[in-house]
Length: 340
Ligand code: ASP
Figure 1 (tube, protein in one colour):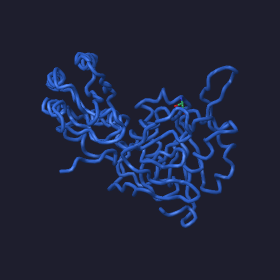
Figure 2 (tube, rainbow, N blue to C red):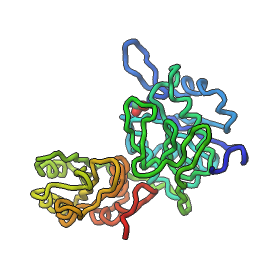
Figure 3 (cartoon, protein in one colour):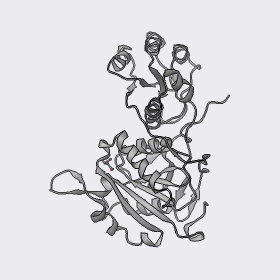
């Protein structure tokens, strides 16, 4: 197991609060859950955390994560960059709905990261008796004291590589999965490592910058390829096409549409509608024709990791050819490269 807090000097952690159900309250009955503030509603519910580490908190925002944005991703990353000298690890408290996108965004921006950044949240507010928030917070803080220098996402009983995780359940306390990469740690009576942590070469550098002109098109049987042109006409510079199975597309009309939008400088990235496995071209006619028309095959990225990666690569100034070259290469362990 990676070095424990007790074996080393006492750790200093920063909790970066962004909102989500964990800290929400219901102000009227009946009425919706609404974001509230961290200091009044979270800390008093997890007494004993201070035995684990010295913990300080910073309020980045208090929102439902549906309102998260690239500008807020950059603020969270800036707090990590600013706190690196002072803190050994970071816990980002976040709504579950878009947590996987934020985890991916942080993993691309924090180049050469040398300490843990762990995102977590909960399905029920921390003030409720049957909450999952306390256990998630305690385990996330524990993970943030370990020698795991990457962006992780803790939920239920597992620490995932953040850019490999997806929210897969609205109901379950075990709400996240990582279909194409094993969890980094599994937490039960013992803490069991299941995959080695990422070790990135330094020096640390915050590389912000996103272009949000990325669209996702979930293909359905019989779909007219004018749907692709419509997305490009409204400003998309990259389109993630969720194909069938291994990344198959209809063999007629779609290759021509892909060739046309590629000629306009748009990156068409093909992923699969299946969560598990890798989108690669060539086994079937439709994928071979799409590849020959200019489609970039997106391997085993989650949709969240792929959308944010396309935004980030565009934000770094890359054009369609730049995306074709860089998208299939891992930046922070988010995909498995195709065999040479
Ligand atoms: N809507 C909430 C959010 O993402 C859901 C949650 O936190 O579980 O902020």
